[in-house]
Amino acid sequence: MSSSESDVLVDSFARRHTYLRVSLTERCNLRCTYCMPAEGVPLQPRENLLTFEEIERLVRLFVAAGVDKVRLTGGEPLVRKDVEHLVDRLGAISGLRTLAMTTNGLLLRKKIDRLVSGGLNHLNISLDTLRPDRFESVTRRKGLDIVLDAIDLAVTRGLAPLKINCVVMRGVNSDELLDFVSLARNRALEVRFIEYMPFSGNGWSDDELVPFEEMLDQIKARHPDIAAIDDDLSPGETSREYRIPGFSGSVGFITSMTKHFCGSCNRLRITADGNLKVCLFGNSEVSLRDQMRAGASDEQLSKLIGLAVGRKKASHAGMHVIAASDNRPMILIGG
Image 1 (cartoon, rainbow, N blue to C red):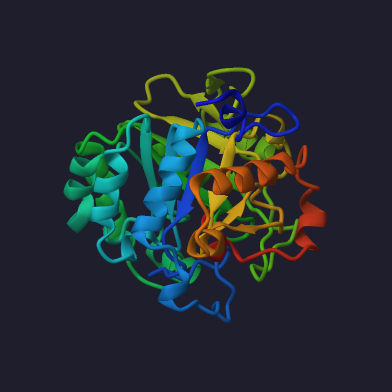
Image 2 (cartoon, helix red, strand yellow):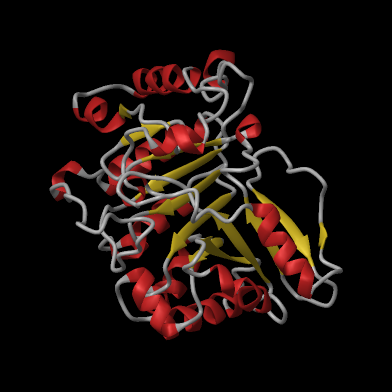
């Protein structure tokens, strides 16, 4: 690889992007309130979504440019037909160190063994409440027992440390922090509390945002010996991780709103319809799908990607500006 090729994923602030998130579908078998607008979202025809061949081509291109971690997202990635075959193809790419997935866990039991054998080696499970009635209220579906079973199954299959993603919303689930912390007592997992983020149609309000410091104080009241593993985030990390003596797992906080980590951001996103987003909260997108289908060469795609990465801003504009800006709903971005 030439020097110019190796710099394709370096932006104007010297951030090198080594982490690519690829959405496989806009569909989901849940309807989480913070992710999907109450009225639903218009789903694109299947032919508008990237094919497995197109996804593999793009992943190979990004890995050649320096990406070593790919996460498959959605929607719910496990509702994409034959997703196991895509994992097989991506798992065989030389230079890809981590092949990860974020899932709600509902379909995990029937697919996990094939996914692991195909190369999946990292898993996040999204779960925002441990109470059945509340689960149904937040997700507009039933299934908490299935998700809890999936968590234990993933740990036994060696996907450790498994990460549990919990979006904390005041008045919705903010009284369950200690219950979630208890999940890490005897399991090798990291419970990650995520500050509520604004996206189109999710009804975000800063009154519902529970800041990181408030969450930490609530946990400290029960576990005063909780301590940060590191004082500062490592480059590219998003979770501020803490340990409680005697616990098998850990607790993390993703502080996108109150203590953002834009300065060391190393991630890029490709939506299910093939658009490159260099920032989760930015509405700027570049269609890699259209360029591929128009016959673009790998060299031309690399140049397009490099131009998009070069325009990435130093940081997001702040939660209130984000809330007032146009962007896709979270389900159409891909986490």
